[in-house]
Image (cartoon, rainbow, N blue to C red):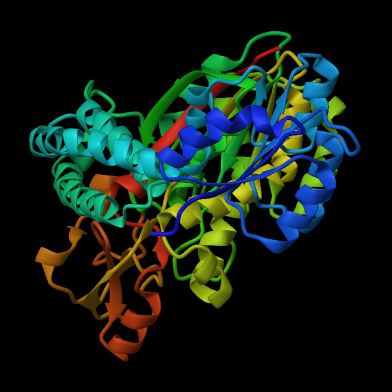
Length: 518
């Protein structure tokens, strides 16, 4: 194994002999230097894993030397060592992107701790994460086998989401694979839980039912409205709970999470159904019967979510609210910038509804665009791509501005998505819905043991185009593929992200209330 090589620059290098001997005894390879110019030459000629750099030296100072080092190598961690505790020098060093900062006199064990932190951190984190997950493995397995209530499942899903994120940072792929096995086992049990209880949950007299899509405004959003404090409801289309946790981490220092809950998306977990249900406060069949002008059937080519503003207006009227409100859908950066230019106007409203479509666009692009498939090759990469969008988005810019105002913010989504792997054969006619996670139509042929079937859509408050219409849903990581050209489409859609069916990722969704820190 290659020794870790360190360059230590100090004009009093002879005084460092005990430190250097201490490190060499522990297997480190140490070069020394007494001035900035020679340091830069050594960096050009050799490969170093870390540099200790004295700040106060004759000739080039430590800060000046650091800038020249960065012109040669941007990736070497540099630890600044100085006698001075002046704030100005510290700020200059930190602004020059040092890895750490030590004040003389430095003890050998301080140096060793810095080396462990900067050079061994990933290994140490991996070992600690692996050990901690191994201790949790049995507990997660027990939770899967004993989960009986909605509360049990949300607790389990939070835990699986946490470990998915933690193991995603680890360099040990074996533990991540074990967690994936547990996650699949959990999804199989969750699918049974949903299929056994779903229609019963739709009875509002059921006190054990979770909050579902039509309940989101009356139970989670309207209660947050208060006089003189504008409410912003931000719906990020197709956002999973793990993606929300990634985004929320970026809001630290701007907002505190006053409340973070999980609610259940209705079936199908698709925008046409779940989001229309949110804005109307009604189930799909109720929308279709009460406001047929706003409902579009699956086989119709018209846009399925063109009437959300009208549906919300109707919900306000039915509930007797007299509010000043706006609705804005943002599908690209220009629309986001235009919205941000209206912040002053938005602050005069009781409630502002903002729908951001990027994560949904990303999900579809990953299916159709090869380079996006490569960028979002696994769950960790997908979360990273969502994070990258968020920190560079007009939404983040908006939130930075809102953080300085007395506002209340609710962030949620309409459904999630799951990476599908297992094709299931079905047949259907031309009017069968095209979605890969659910199908509705008359002439469906399938194996009932491989899907969740609703022969009577009325029990799930779903509309039907004719008397023999039914719905079927894929569970866990299955996806529905027609018999014709089966192998081609099974290969094309395998490992793409889809929604519409039954899984924790699609159905267990975040709703968070944020308060500005300042």
